Length: 251
Image 1 (cartoon, rainbow, N blue to C red):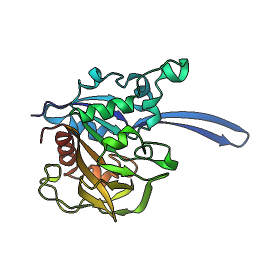
Image 2: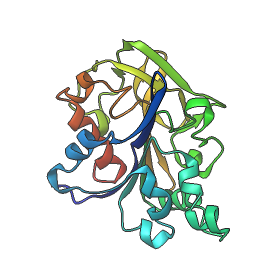
Image 3: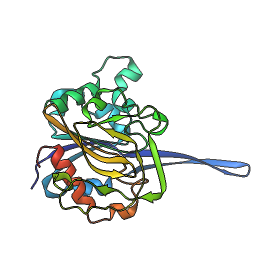
Image 4: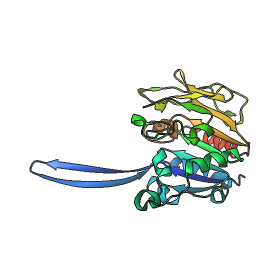
């Protein structure tokens, strides 16, 4: 049984569509979350997951070190740096608020865990809009980030390959995994361990930061880069549980 307490932020979106039919048009709005499968897998064996979708994270993500220390690790997935930087008190009311990127860096350095999962608004993201390059979050990660748009789209599918055999994160997993449809290009730090690759690039990287641990997974945990074949793979849950348990100091 794992007693880890996990704060998971991001992995949600709203789509606002305009439907034009001749002279007339109307709009529809749809809200979706992309981490249901992952959260269900992580919730096994006693892990406690507090989920903050993107539209709530700007106001509700912890603003003090004491609040963050209630968790063993933080997962950031498809959530841009602005959502954490721009607390509504600052953006709407010009009130100074803590820099939550600094808080996360200090939290990991002091022994907390950090996992960043790829996507259009993670690492640098589409058109560089995620904006984590050069921030305290990048310093806490086991990877460095490129300038600008870091997406690598592989619509034909690309097969990841496990490199290590003796690291707890990939223990018991096969050498090849189901295909993915894209990823963010990340560069492992010299002192970090590359556990899996995709194409010529790193896919899964783990490292130590101060007294804490951090993990970078360059692709998605769900649609669209992570197709049903990967999510339904019998290694999916094991991979993510081992990532979280290692980052949280349980492996």
